Image (cartoon, rainbow, N blue to C red; front, top):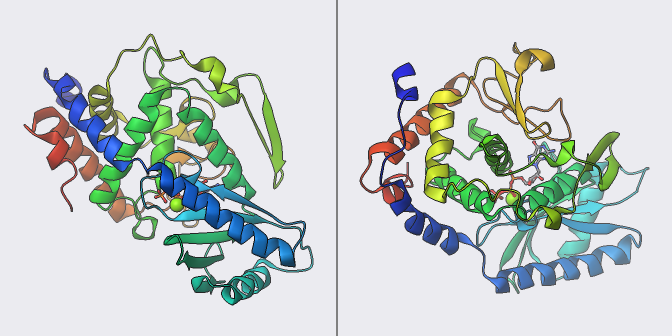
Amino acid sequence: RNYKRQMICRRDIDSLNVPFLSIYQSLIPPEEEKVKQKQLLSLLEKLVIKEWPKARLYLYGSCANSFGVSKSDVDVCLAIEEAHMDKSKIIMKLADILQSDNLQDVQALTHARVPIVKLMDPVTGISCDICINNLLAVVNTKLLWDYSRIDARLRQLAFIIKHWAKSRKVNETYHGTLSSYAYVLMCINFLQQRRPAILPCLQEMNTTYSVTVDDVDCAFFDQVEKLNDFGHCNKETIGQLVWGFFYYWAYCHDYTNTVVSVRTGSIISKREKDWTRRIGNDRHLICIEDPFEISHDLGRVVDKHSIKVLREEFERAANIMQFDPNPCVTLFEPY
Ligand code: GTP
Ligand code: MG
């Protein structure tokens, strides 16, 4: 692989900016979709509060972190203090409440890794998953959203990478590839690593936002409107960044020894986290540290087979970015 490290970016790379940006634009959800999501959330709130007056609903995931493409499902978290009820009882009860209103396809999935209620709202056509007390996801959603407001290139890059991952079928955790959440963290870390940096490390700055959730202290700098010109010294364009991202994951990342860490804004060693060997089902073949649950490797779903698939896809993408006459088409060809 070493000779490829010498490769330099193709000369016409900037001619890809316009087509990449138009793909990005075409994926952004229209304003009316946001309005419909809000409508659905208020309907759900109305129904839930009748049963549990102190409960609250939060949007999380791609409908709230700014990395959602058009027509994504809506992720909702029900925050509720019902010490005497376990999650699956709450899920059943919630499904009951929602069923009785005119929502469609209400299903209680009590045995899933994360128990949820699934439903479809016939008025807006939106599908929605509701989980219980997953407040860490609500906080990491805020962190991603705050990062997205610092430099426009993060959202552009993440949309392109997510679109690529979905087209190439490497965004399927149940098949051993990575979640959307993991890809966005990889994009954030990649932009933290550029020189000059395009993104700062919000968790290493002074704390302006802090909550404790499930005994985890979540603290970071969230006054990001003050960081508007953070990345201005770096003039890299979206074409160069997409190329750089794939090139990094194809030929530069040290899979054996390192962990991608948004929390520290750097690449850290597996040894310091004791992620050097397989423990239970955690193989740590590609390591992406959760910014708050730091014992949690988002690459844990990746196995001996899927790591090969992933790395081949990174190499395919890097080679297309380097040599293909029409990368904006070839990159996203369905697998
Ligand atoms: P799409 O639905 O594919 O557009 O993306 P998404 O951003 O909704 O991502 P995903 O379905 O992967 O996850 C939804 C949300 O759940 C994420 O934004 C995170 O907030 C949270 N989440 C997902 N996986 C994990 C995980 O392993 N750990 C934690 N703490 N949160 C997670
Ligand atoms: Mg989602």
